Length: 234
Image 1: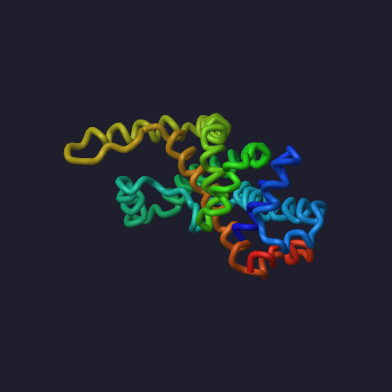
Image 2: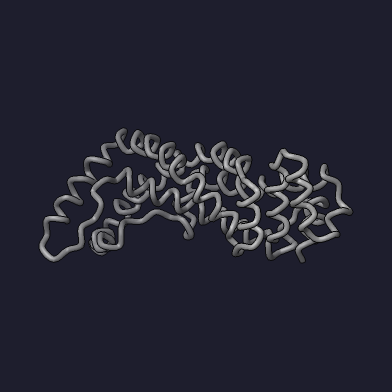
């Protein structure tokens, strides 16, 4: 799989001499594939690794019913959630959590163009690091290159979502009161900042899931071209 993600980088290098240098360092089997085949396969892999997972998260319950990324109250405040449920107010607690997750689902639609731009900007040095890196090396690269831009895109969408229902002010009042209790660990009173951070983590988590699937399972290669190209790393 490390070889395959190196091809993604090759596709985006425009200098012919630099492209040849990269190809020369890869296994000779690559020569049996045309640049067009490799390019098309990589576009399909990007669809699976980025667009597929981002689309899932933008759907209703994309966060809320996904245990890998569901946004819950900070650990210090989960006792509040438990207390509500203990006195028969589970539906109220659920609605509170839905507000957080719906805002994240709304925001993630902003992610795809930023990821696409990040892939286009991959350099030869990045290629070597990803090629020799861990199974989530491509995800880590995207995280390092997109985190600030995604935060800036997500934050206003989430803030607007919360403002419509007054959740941001309710949260701030609740947390500020909690933080005033002696011997408690302070919690971030900024609901928008908290959920933005959780939404970012959720996006990268799901991309890492897809990256691992493509690296380790031939069954995740859903077209003949993907199977042909990705077979090089098996």
